[in-house]
Length: 83
Image (cartoon, rainbow, N blue to C red; front, top):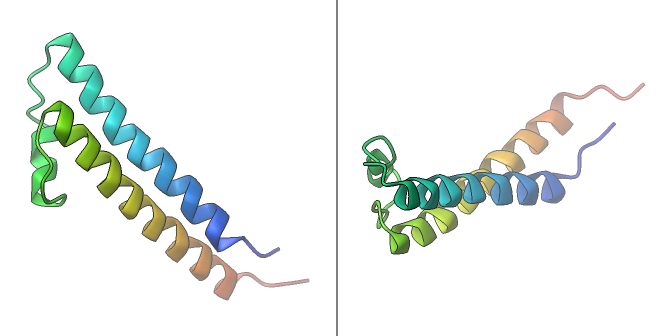
């Protein structure tokens, strides 16, 4: 069975981007300090623990998840054995 790389990449990007976005918004609304999430700025340029930063995190999360999903699909298709 072959995986659809684009579908896997899009789903990974949407899920990872939404996770970063929702985690940031949740902590902002509940008064969390966001010390752990603030460390994302080392990987996601422009990210900060703020409402604007949550949108930047959404974009970077989508890009990271998209690339990871596409690479996983590509490697799976290379090593998958058809019967």
